[in-house]
Length: 62
Image 1 (cartoon, rainbow, N blue to C red):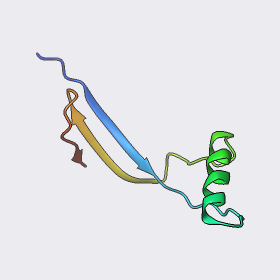
Image 2 (tube, rainbow, N blue to C red):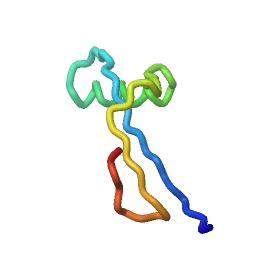
Image 3 (tube, rainbow, N blue to C red):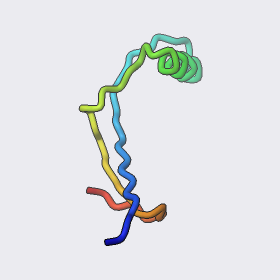
């Protein structure tokens, strides 16, 4: 029996409302709120899944 490392990656998405004078400012505010754990994505909102095996760059959607 051979040992293999399978990596599973999930992409989650959630919309957040940000009030700002510009798009650039909104992105900065959103990044800060994310880093400060004010904006939290729940694991139940998976938008995309993929996996690879043994460090391969070949990702398979499932």
